[in-house]
Length: 203
Image 1 (cartoon, rainbow, N blue to C red):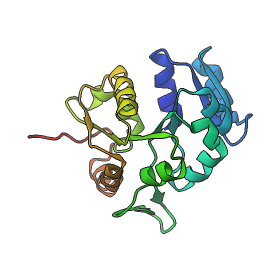
Image 2 (image 1 turned 45 degrees about the vertical axis):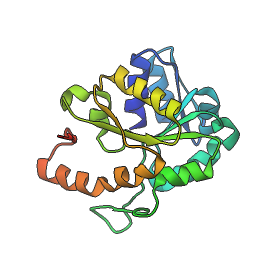
Image 3 (image 1 turned 90 degrees about the vertical axis):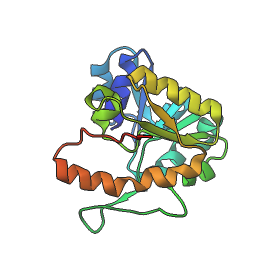
């Protein structure tokens, strides 16, 4: 997911630093070489310090640990786009959610990093659809968060990817519903045998 989003961000003109636990992570270093002069790699802390907008594309159950490694001071005041889902594969497939109903990963991240401007986005679709909405024309890209300006920045990014219908669901508590879509997504993936589908809201 991180590589796909990072590649798209570079392609629309952004400078991107991919973070990982090690500054010499082979996959991150290889991606940066292939992606061109606007791409680079480093630690989670390096990436968080570098970015004006930070994307959390880590496995959801490890997201809080990874963001702690990124460093609260490096995230303070920045838009933090949470793309992750707290999927628990410990009992096999299909995965369950390690947090749901009365809380969400998005809310946990906002509580852990109160100075960051957390926006939940892109988590309800496959990475191929995130960066190529033409695969699923006339569908919605959901987002939520507490900061209106931060959400506006994420909407700009969505539109630069080609999304025509970003749908703001409100404050960060809306992440509960966005994350709880995932069990349905998994079922649909099994039914369709393709990740290239999305949701359309008809009124």
